Length: 103
Image (cartoon, rainbow, N blue to C red):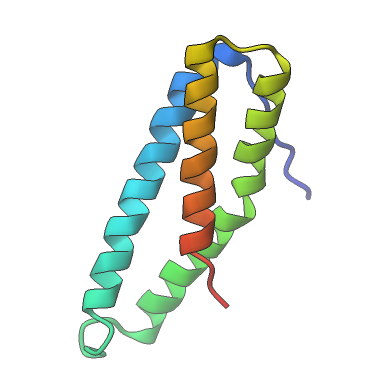
């Protein structure tokens, strides 16, 4: 079953901005916590590490939706303030995608 993305009007920009900023901040915190445990295998077992990797991989697979949403908003002629928020969402999303690539 293929998931369909749902896109929103300009009135949803503040919600997307809050979600993208929160997701990035929480992920950076999680990464710091994981890095602190890196040389302590007695703290994190393989199952926990694999679950974290799976979660972030799944989230990365959905980043295209946020970027596509931003493109659609740009096409709707946003105000300068909305445009600034769109740019912030794009930066947060791109920063998240660069930081959380697992192989």
